[in-house]
Amino acid sequence: MNLNHISIQTTALLLFGTALLCGCGDTGESSSASENSALSAKAQRIAAMKQVTDHHSFARPEEARITHLSWDANVDFDTRTISGCATYDIETSSDAERIILDTHELTIEGVTVDGQPATFALGEAQEHLGRPLTVDLTAGAKQVSICYVSDPGADALLWVEAQGDQAPFLFTQSQAILARTWIPVQDSPGIRFTYEANVRVPQGLMALMSAENPTAIDPDGRYSFRMTQPIPAYLLALAAGEVEYRSVGQRCAVYAVPSLIEDAAYEFGEMEDLLLAAEGLYGTYAWERYDLLILPAAFPFGGMENPRLTFATPTIIAGDRSLVALVAHELAHSWSGNLVTNATWDDFWLNEGFTVYFEQRIMEAVYGREISEMLATLSYQGLVDEVDAIQDLNPDDTHLKLHLQGRNPDDGMTAIAYDKGYFFIRLMEETVGRERFDAWLSDYFATYAFKGMDTERFVDYLKTTLLADPSTLAAVNLDAWIYGPGLPPNCPTVSSPRIQNVDAALAAWEAGETSTADLPWKDWVYQERYRFLSNLADDTSVERMTELDDAWEIGGTGNNEILFAWMEQAVRSGYQPAYPRLESFLIEVGRRKFLTPLYRAMKETNQMDMALAIYKQARPGYHAVATGTMDELLAWN
Image (cartoon, helix red, strand yellow):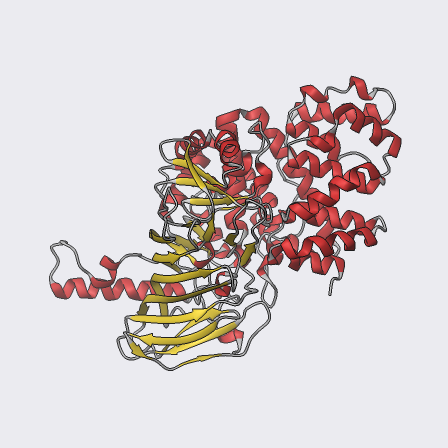
């Protein structure tokens, strides 16, 4: 199918709800007036859908779109497949002849429309996108049901094998466009739907979804779920494993395997404080509960903001609650991303830039400005490094507004969306003042709740609200930030005296003016230790690395961010005593944030034999999100 003719939309103007669709409810209107109102609302939705093109979905929502999913599924660990029937309530235009859904390597076993067998066809496969599933519709069709089986190698799914006393585990990762690999769906961030599900898993395992969840294992392995708030497909999530539940607050709990549950309950015991701080900043939490599931270490991200149930890596369990900023980040997504969503993946920065800003505000509210500014300083360091790495290869990828047509949208998930987006949002706050900015942002979340937003309409919105004054608009310079490369000259300055002291200590140590014994390592918090290690010179000698390791036993730290920074420096310095820990870490952990720099360091220091030997062992345990990046980096075939 020609992608130039595939029209997809933002739902930013959508008036969601069945009451609007049918004109029902005690409104005092006449029947005719109600019908006209419903038609008007529907016309507004269809008009809104035509505003934006999502190049990463085959769907044509202006003709027919899904509104509610009823999913019945069986999870089979022996075959590594999910077999199920996805039944969708649909909304159609008056002349709709078909509905198109996204699939990738799914076996379609049967399709019905309003309970009757229907004609359907799978189109040609396209790189990154999979195959369109086109279902012919009868006049006035209300429901489409597709029965199918996923492929054992489905990219969204990772089947973690049982080891020793550890039961097998399954988890999904649907962002950006991987939901289509485990369920036929209109896989675009601009299309939202509610859902209910009945899922069967092997006995002894608990199933969890981005929905209302159980708190105990069902002896028969049967679970029911309900999500009453509309979500896009990338937030559809499923996990199954031997996990336990621990409450850590009135609206917060953690799930983890038995061996980690106590550590997790302690580590994230302040989740309710984070939630209350978030609500105090930008309004009521819309998703009822905020729970956290600790996944196997193979999870490719730090966290994923699946509604009601954040998926998180165990690498954030440090034993001292030092890495809870990640939880603050995923919690912030409950407003920026899950509530107001990027209309397409070209607009990804609208999710992540606001989320990093909100994360920093939560951390400031709970732990103080000193901590949040150290985090912001580390973000700036990472952003500068990312801009330098990308600028020469593809300067357009340093724009906030991306152009990812024909590419994997995963290519846009860089520090640009996160940290350049953050500094742009921070610039606006500093330009207009925090009080005014906070009121504006609260109104933004409320106005566009459960809707999508694209960059161009966001710019228009800014120009008529926060930046309506011409002098303020000029001071911010929207075009340079959103459509220009690199970092504009008016990028906010981050000031962290504690980080400055670390930089001074590092300079003195490298100059031989301060001994290792005199460095205040034991007094430093995580951010300070990370800053010191990550800024060591690449040519730091083995002798000096040995001094640091002997003094601080860095390889034995429980903080994986510090461990990662140490191992990257060990590779670049050729400090071989750290290599056994490096190898075990890369085999155990699948978090891409760690994998990419470590494998790249080996590649850039002519240690490819070691990199490939480790990767050969580790690759079967990595998620497809990670192997896609590592395969390219290491030219694996």
